[in-house]
Image (cartoon, rainbow, N blue to C red; front, side):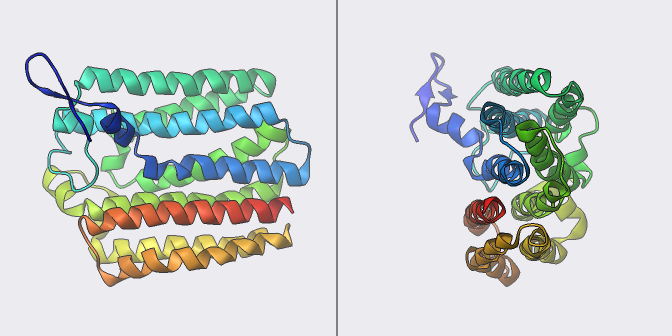
Length: 299
């Protein structure tokens, strides 16, 4: 990637570095819940498509805003000075902290505006849900007591990128909250968690040195690897539970094929930079599972 150069000769982030800062490999966690939520809405009622489209805008903006907020907060705390994964703007000195902070705030503002439009068209209580989601995104590594440093990141990801994202999309798209939406949200949330688990597994050595006590640091390397495999396995089994309402949801079990390789690598002990490819495989698995589950629910 090509870097720009400031007048003083200091490297400056270009478009490629900013794109990497959004962490594209994590974006399936934003797209899949919306796709599954729309499928549930289609299966149980009539979809209002413009509201569903705004739900996708909210979800993507929330994910990107959270990633940029993490870049800023980890950078100013100094916990990203020895990263194994993709470059961070603040920690690497490629962008001023205030610029990255402003980018995060602006992205959250996009999510807030899109969410407000949806809330005004459906129910005001969605404003509170949106505010809680933005707070969760910022406080993951920001604020005086970031919950991501206390082993709670996976729990919040399951809640906000699983339960809230799927059921919220269902409600926005059709104005109802059927039990099917909650059942479908569980496997979606578990696969979102698996993305964070493998990311934190990779970073255990550097997080331990910087005092960042993620769940992976607290559990240790071996147990974290088992947690990853468990999240994937239970997510796949969750398709069987969804099939109680929509039998074609069993199509999602075909995702066992793309699941096999990353699970095998994690349980086989790959570490460090080799886990970057596993993160990409997990994102691909999430897309495959989400697409198959959405199609199965909609049929």
